[in-house]
Image (cartoon, rainbow, N blue to C red):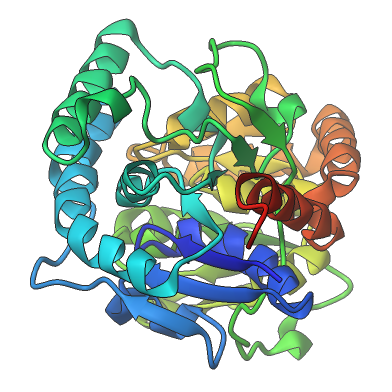
Length: 391
């Protein structure tokens, strides 16, 4: 049996794709542990999980929303990823030395995990939660990213271990998506990719939901901006509420602060959390921020989308959805109720959107990740056996 150590950014969207994979490994009898920021992720991990806390006095900042586009990628590195890496290196290395894994499964943006694995000559698999991370975005930005990676490696690794892109494993890079969604608009960063599809499932917490509220006689949609933006973006939700007030034949479940429900029309249910995977089976379309997990989960059900990207990788994912013919664009910061209403109506009535969403659903649902992550787990275990024949 193998010992596998998982590590992830302290962000739910990065953790969720790995839960089914870790559960599969555990069910097969392998020893699984987590080296994570316990204060942030403890409630998202299964009960009884073996956790090595890597919390320090440093607290990662809440990601802001005022800066968008490529500039938000730069700030993500400067304000979030690089400081978090510096503070996580020592506790993460201590966790690895104590647990002594045969192989590590590393969220590719959890750079500390990749650097520790490289320093200690451990095999590791990169887990890529968004296809935007594997493409080149702009020459100047790409060159700047390489410079940042070089600087942090020079402070931690021996010169012989420094590489241009330490965030990607030389062994295997598992992408929780499909090539049909990625498209060909951007050049990919060279790496040993395996497109495995979304690994849905795992030990996500149970969320109560009033299923009786849904009316089988009316179509319903889901509106969500993900966990990061949900509590701070009231303007967008206010616009959606006003648009839906004039669409009484449609129901909507909105993932937003509960107090917004006080101003919601009768056809809108506002909940701070929802059982998203189950709810997607009951709706006809999704309005979202183009978060990669939400996009893949919606498309897996053959649902067309309206994408309103905010920052980070979201504009790239939104473009991929639109280029694949499965979604429509909505300008997040300046959308009006009239435009929102028109766009939602088109999403639900355009047969081409439905056909392309159904096509992508077939590809997503034939990918190994959806089948329970067993084949993904086998990639990790073969790597562990090859690199550690005596383990």
